[in-house]
Image 1 (cartoon, rainbow, N blue to C red):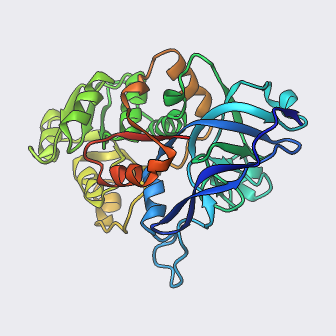
Image 2: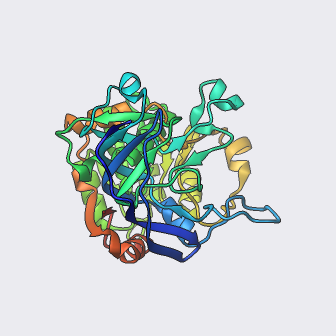
Length: 362
C-alpha cells in the first residue's frame, strides 16, 4: 500500500434504519491489495437515497418485505474524491496515482454470477451498491474505500468536485437515452427535469432528434431543460401535455418516451401520448407500485418497453461530455451543505420543490 497516513476515525452519515440516520465517528478505511481510498470532496443525495430514508420495501408484493437498505452502512453513491491510498496492483490496473481524482461505478459486481459472466455486470445477482449494503460503505463520509472488485475511473483534474459528483447520475441518464434507441427525426419526450431528467435532455440532444420535449411541474427546471437543448417545455399543471404532444405529431404521438419523474401518473401519461410501436423507457425509482392498463402496451399499441438501470459503460462518456462542456452539469447543482446538515439535505430532496441536485461536502 502506498499513500499518506490517515486519521484513525472520521465523521460519516450512517444509515441504521428508515429515518434513523446518524452522524457518527467511525474507523477510517485502509487500502488493501486492489483497493483505493479517496478523500471525499462531494457526495450527492439521490432519489434512491430518499427511498432508503423513508423505508421503501425492496420487493413489492413480497410477504416479508425487505428493507431497501441493509444498515448499518455509510450512505451515498454519487461521490468523487482525491486518491489518498492505493493498494497493491491498482496503479497497474487503473493508472491511478496519489492525488488523482477518481470515482467508482455505483455497483461493485461479484464477477461470478450469470449476469457478470455474460457481460451484464450492472445486473449482478449479488448487486452490492455503495451505500446500500454493509459490505460497501458509501461516500457520505470524510474518506471512503473502493473494494478490489470495483470499476474505477480517473477524472480529469479540470472537472471541479461539484461536477465530478454528477458523473454517476449523468451516466445513468446516458444509459436511459441509449435504451430509447432514438433515430433522426424522432419526437422524444422526457418526463421529469430533475438531475436525471436534465441529464437525459442533455444526452438526447446529442442524438439530434427531430423534436425534444421536456415535461415537469416546476417552471424553473423547464428553463434549465431548454438551456440544455429541449425544443419545447411543458408543465402538466398548466396544460394538457398529452393533447399538446398529440397535436404536434398529427395525432400519432411521440416516438420515444422516457419516464424519469418517479411518479406513477407519469407512466400513464406516457402510455397515452406515445405512438403505436413507440419505445417507452422506464428509469424511475418508484415509491409505490404503479398500476396501468397493460392492454395499451400489447393489443392497443404494441409498444417496446425498455427498462434502464444504473449507468453501464457510460461513465467514460459522462466524464468526456462534462470535461468538454457538451452537457453543462453545473446547472444541476443547486445546493451544497456540510456533512453535519445531512437531515436538512435529505428533507430538501424529499420536498423537491426548491432544489435539483443537493450535495454534501465532508
